[in-house]
Image 1: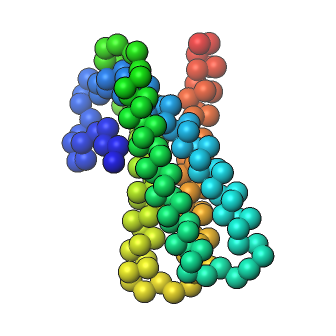
Image 2 (image 1 turned 90 degrees about the vertical axis):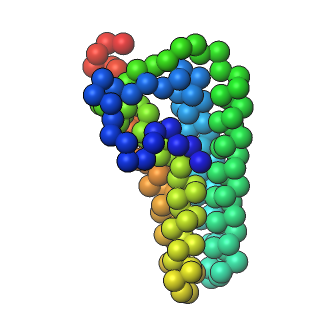
Length: 162
């Protein structure tokens, strides 16, 4: 969905180049996705409190994640079209790991989460409650991983005095 880097291609020794518009759209979409995922986790937890989790709840959760993925793609495309950033940005491997990869991973998370859940369902997973909790945990981990990376970047900027 959001293939910023080619899979299997090693990082270039002088760093990676990324179109400035693409980077702006990537960062902006990630922030939106964190909000959408956080809202989904809260709604998913509230939704199942009054009853036993059933297959229809898992289906609702997976559909919601797919909807979020589609919305994120639309936001990304809109931001890419609206960005006024000019030129190319260069990132060394450390900057890429802290600034670019967490955003790219988060934007790929909806598709990956649904794919993993569908693999379990196709393999015969029958305990809807466990699957539902696992999916929520995966969404939560994706957000927390991105948040931790964003925090590291902020701390480094504060240490550098920028």
